[in-house]
Image (cartoon, rainbow, N blue to C red; front, side):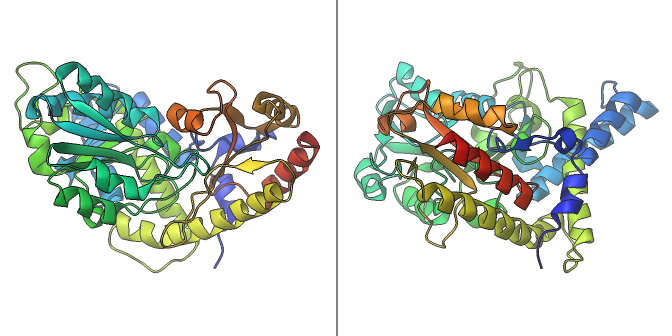
Length: 409
């Protein structure tokens, strides 16, 4: 069975604008189901939740429904996740919430490959005497040097922050294996799944990581982020909200200002959308959203991989083009993100040529500034990044490759 891209594309109103949208790694379009759920909340229940009058009760139900579905999305319990404004904010708040549990001289490991969201907040802990150690990448490929982790881990390591998948190098990491090694050293594992979750199913129980964070707006949702943490750790981490918020109130203690109600309710539309795809493709029935996603993501991953392979093959055939990363994981997976550059040619010029042909794409470091610098590139010009989503189709790729052929001539 193959993905019915005509049906998929019909769910996304912006795709009718005539452009080929391949900046999906920065943020996807949202389907009409998300738009409708958000609109309905704002037009019918834009009131404060948690009161007993009718519209407030409906608001509470819609917000709670969205949160529960996002927990089910990653096989977590509803009280193990927090919905917040962004992955960057989630990591920052959690770094501050965990800081009192560390002492001066303790060590935190961050990578040179990650988006800065999962780097900068941890590095700020140096102000409090925490030692930051850097897990570096190979200067030729951008891949994490796996052998280096053994040297970095020590009896003083308290936490390792790393990405499930690079948002530039597209390399998928073996999280369970890395977590096992990190736990053996007595440390916590904090995983950023933002570049992974749009393309592959997430099961936080199977990963066994202590924390997992990802952005919903990268996978057809509103501009929200999900933070997962093991329940005992969430309870132990310190309150970052008003002083009267109790330590066991996970839903609020990591959210100064509280959640965005309409976007939390809009998250229900993500499940609506994926359930519509599941039903349309007549996949084997399943009793949970997570189980349905397992079946659906197999179709999505196969479709995205085929498109990405076509783009990669084209770029490999062009002299002078250098592709970043693209090294398969232990099980052969690659995210459908292809970053490249041409020595001696500004990435900005290539992108301008593509934009002129109605190809929506960008260039730069994409907030993975340390990785781009390690590759010998400047943050300002950086790489050209092609980020595919499952709503891209063969016609998109044909137009993209035609434009690339002209831009790289």
